[in-house]
Length: 359
Image (cartoon, rainbow, N blue to C red; front, side, top):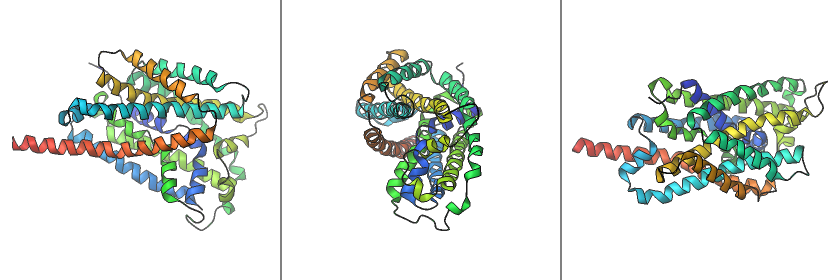
């Protein structure tokens, strides 16, 4: 009997999938698009993601844990699903490679301006392939190890608390040059990842406490985002945050230790665990989709081809601004997938159930 993912591993898997590169820019996004006390918008996004997770819960319960692919193919001919599957593969694979490419571009900007980005990207992608080909159980355990290697970074906030001032906050809420719709898309980017729990159905059982685990992982991510955003608003102030690309990196730059210079360069390396976990999970979802279309091809071959193909796509981006335009577009598509796919599955299950009752 195959091993099943435990409740703890699911919680950590969701948390680590959400904790990608979005956290670097999140406080600036909240200030730019939501205005004064923009961090409050995180509660709204938490509510929206929780609703989406509830839809996923309904799919799991009404489908009795059936695979997403099985549900889709029970109502739609497989040849008609091929374009949809190819779309999923393209979005998730490119999304994965751009997450890592953004990390590499930041790394180059901070520490290695003369080193070509493709060297770092090649090394990281090789690491991703080694994890990816081992399957979801190893991915879950690896993410758990990465969690313990990186979660302590949250504690670094204590080093900047002395510069935190409540006077930098205002009594006004969401005031300024705001754009809630666009800001919602950009902020939601940091929460993406929970929707991949749809593909965990075959790898869990009742002991996994699926819905509670996913909600807990999502809540943990929100708590981390809240703490970083509140500290940033109290440290820099609303006006200054609006002009920052990566406020979290600027926060790290203020940390001073007597035995290390430019500690932000050292600390930034630990964020690789977060970016890698996010990327691996999206690649894994792509691999699962390819396997459904081409079941005779081995997992390691699929994983290698996907990562290699997107490697050559990602290295064409040598400017963060250009990369962000594409990743922003893809994140909007992924938000659409996160909501539309569970709704589509629920409609199929509802129609299938009625046909069964009438039979």
